[in-house]
Length: 270
Image (tube, rainbow, N blue to C red; front, side, top):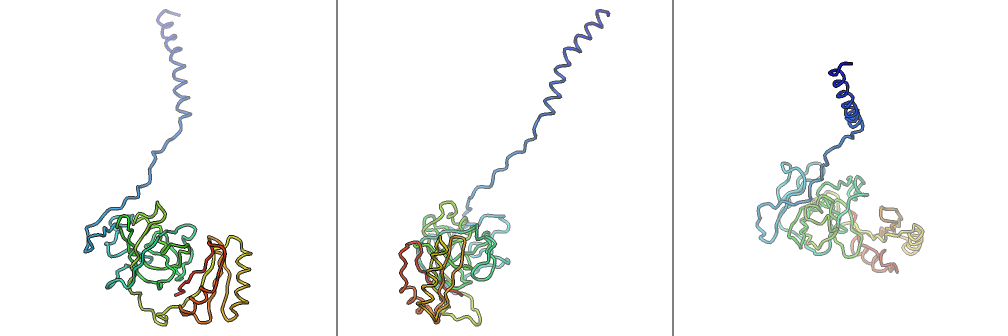
């Protein structure tokens, strides 16, 4: 072999391991995808309204579809537009609910959508529009009552997940709020005084709920007493023979449960 050919052969031999390493590295290289973090839960204030102490916010979502401060999107693309002044006001703790209630039927017969501007209240008529103001940050949201609850002492309203995010209650879980209710829509055939019942629970053990149900059936023979399971436990409900609020209040006052977590609640059915 000539000296020139020998030098060419030596250079080729030296490059061969490097080429093999390069192929091996490409063969074992794993694909990577850029991480897309979720958008932060940030409320964007709107222009102030007539109430100088209240700062409305836009609900989270596409800004092009965000309603004005006086309205909020509800299932079916309906708009909440309260008329006149509030007819009642109360202050207490608000909480929120999502899974496992999402896509379950609510008390008004519609399917609960945690992404809609709705809420649960024990006593306000179904379909009522309320303004819920977070007293810590003065943010508020309008929601429609479509469900019953919350059934925890000290809490007065359960917001949907979307409504809780809009007034910054989602992360802390609860907040002190003011609930202002507007006149409910007229519904033909519905007694404006309401149809009322008493609900007791939740019991972790179904046997405890069944025992209470049997005791109440013997005690209130003219009433309808049922036991049912919910996402948080087992409940007992009494529908008095006379379903006005006064009669239901008498029944609730006569029931004494030693368990502080299973006290009777007065609940409006319509």
